[in-house]
Amino acid sequence: MSRRILVTGAAGFMGGRVARWLSSRPDTEVIAVDVADGPAAGDPVRWVRRDVAEGLADLLDGVDAVVHHAFVLRPPRDLPAAARVNVTATARLAEDAAAAGVRRIVYPSSTTVYGAWPGTGFHTEDEVPRPVPGFTYSEHKVAAERLLFDAAGRGGSEVVVLRGCVVTGPGSDNFILSSLALPFFPVPRGANPDMQFLHVDDYVSAVAAALDAAATGVFNVAGAGTIPLRTLAAVLGTRVVVVPENVLRPVVEWSWRLRLQTRSPAPGLAFISHPWLSSIDKAADELGWCPARSSREAVAAWAAER
Image 1: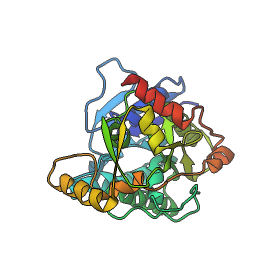
Image 2 (image 1 turned 135 degrees about the vertical axis):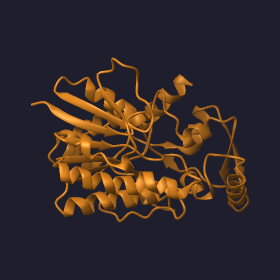
Image 3 (image 1 turned 60 degrees about the vertical axis):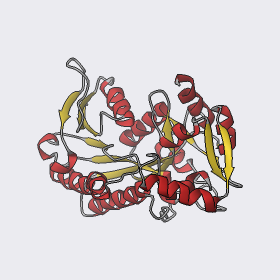
């Protein structure tokens, strides 16, 4: 049977890859939604320029599943505007999908919802999220997850949440990797956490598994293995500059407030100071998904393009 799948945030890196892959399947019709323009005419995907917060009820008729990528990824300066996209629009989408009878919503969340804390091991999906205070990206992901599951509990669509690590590969623009690719990179003294990365092709295969499997709930997705922060810097040809945290933190915060840098305010330092690793056993057991590439291979694919 043919399926109709709607992808929000489809002009972005991850959403675009998912929409293009789905469109290559002969049994799938794709509706791609974004506030930005899609590809030129002739693309097999049906592109609709729309703000998700304004509602998608007229587009959801006959839709079997939604993959919801619309999200402000970079640390925002306009917090209300980011919350409108990240949280309010997600609530509206859940309502519209339930009213239209959409069977399933796949939502890409993040392993950053577990936070980055000293002495932690591999996080599992049964843990209560504990995002770093002030790191808006994680806080909004937690809020969006709750909204979707609350709607599902009231008789809405089935929900599959994919908590991913940094998704990378050719064409990606992640602030952690782009920062590490600078000639010099300041690191808090003593910090060298192991990190995980996921190749975008493995992310797409995880979405495919989430759409096809019967299982619902939360699943961590990450590349195989880990790579220490300082090893990663060496691979990228970056010189690490060690700075005491009590010096680095105010410098990062004030440079953010004064708009001298656009990468992250001070709470983002947690993710280069402490581990935020996740176990992917549940995804293997219940979705039948495993990454084809390691964390190192995912980074290498990104670095080769640059």
